Amino acid sequence: MIYRTMAVLIAMGALAQPACAKARIEKGWASWYGHEEEGRRTASGERMDCKRLTAAHRTLPFGSVVEVVNRRNGRSVLVTINDRGPHRPNRIIDLSPVAAAQLGMQRKGLAPVTIKPPPFE
Image 1 (cartoon, rainbow, N blue to C red):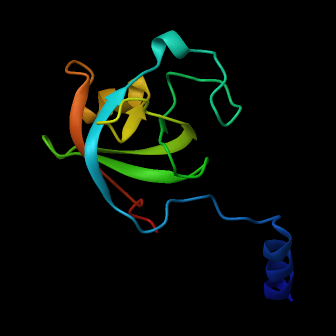
Image 2 (image 1 turned 30 degrees about the vertical axis):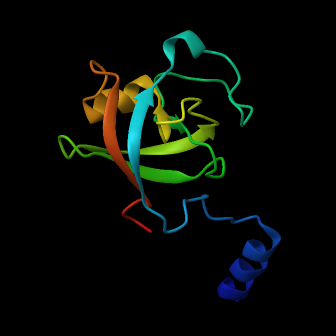
């Protein structure tokens, strides 16, 4: 009975799984943004919060969770896509300040990264 109830709830969207990126890997340059954007609305409609692990990507669906790995030092972070960008052609993702700090790239501002689905998928 419980399985039938769960199947009905999933079909109705009541138990929708969190949106995650499809199995796709990208390599390129990451930058970070944030302090000047604090409190402004992102493209997803939520307010920018520099203390959250979020990012801007051109095409991934809002709510997607991806793992970003700094190829220089091997550090990684899970971020949620909540905005569109980056607006520079040579970059593939813009990170919040706290995500950039976890990757160890805040000082330089740019880092070569790999974006991939989270390890729990």
